[in-house]
Image 1 (cartoon, rainbow, N blue to C red):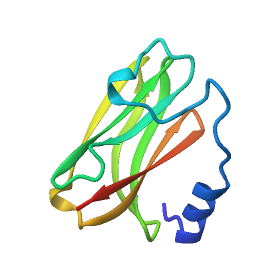
Image 2: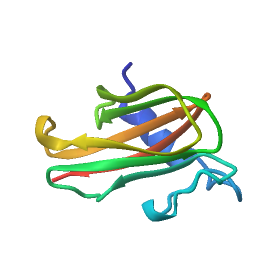
Image 3: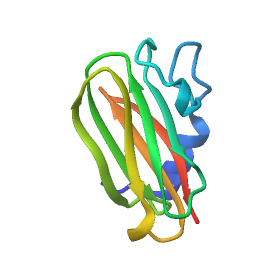
Image 4: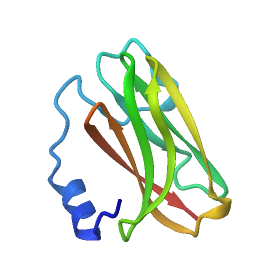
Length: 121
């Protein structure tokens, strides 16, 4: 799958702030399976030198796809996919095989799309 830079920018710029109770960026320590909505923390630490962890939480079992795209919109890696149980999930991202730069982590949960920026230095 290839997303153009314009498509990624449009996605990031046209998505309004989430309504109360919707997905939001929070500290990894506060991710709780008791949340009523999907929570995509994104990368921590960010920026990172050697690697980072992408964290998300699900309120219930769900089909999940977590993929990493470069700024050209090319799929770099599929980090997590399949049915996942409710609760907090941490996915390691090792920067050893990736070039220094900016990437987009795209989490799709039951058709809902969440995007976070990942910076590798």
